[in-house]
Amino acid sequence: GQNIDQPTEMTATEGAIVQINCTYQTSGFNGLFWYQQHAGEAPTFLSYNVLDGLEEKGRFSSFLSRSKGYSYLLLKELQMKDSASYLCAVLDSNYQLIWGAGTKLIIKP
Amino acid sequence: DVKVTQSSRYLVKRTGEKVFLECVQDMDHENMFWYRQDPGLGLRLIYFSYDVKMKEKGDIPEGYSVSREKKERFSLILESASTNQTSMYLCASSLSGGPQETQYFGPGTRLLVL
Image (cartoon, rainbow over all chains, first blue to last red; front, side, top):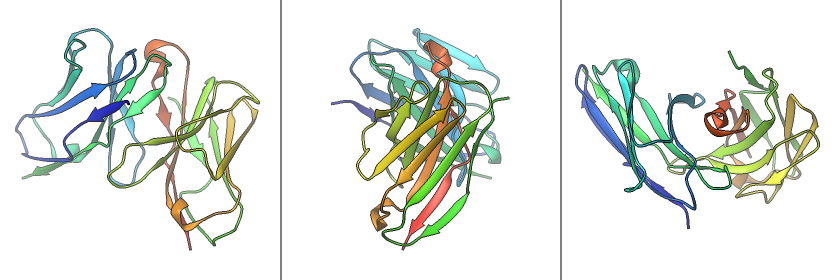
């Protein structure tokens, strides 16, 4: 079966750095997405990786290792507004998006 | 900016009622999707559509149907609402191919079935 694993919840301090991991087992791979979802709101697109390596976008970076079935989202200089759930999703061989359950990130002052 | 709108943010219905959830996107996207989101679970795909009048079942289509008569509009229908359909319903749209598969979401409809 297809499976995406991410931690249920993480806590970090304002101004610090946090890494949210995602591992996946899917039938084929056509890219990995990270979305941010604030409580009660819709998910919004953060990043897309299809090749191995690190993609940096401001305070957020996303890393992919296809051979390991692994990705992480790195958030630097954490701000209170970064408190949200972070969803990992993989596009499989049929171009279907397989979603993880999300990681709830709590930022403390 | 892509805009995806949903007809209601909150909805309360009674068991057995027929429920219509509407979704409209303004970016000429080919693909449209309906998901439900429940606590502790990932987004689960109910139905999707790659073109007008075309529909495909997702992972959990039972108890639901859809309609896509126009490219910009994708409707989700609960034929006879049940309490286990209480959930957050999210509509999304995307173009086709690679990074363009990025899905853009509407604000969601929180449905309570009593």
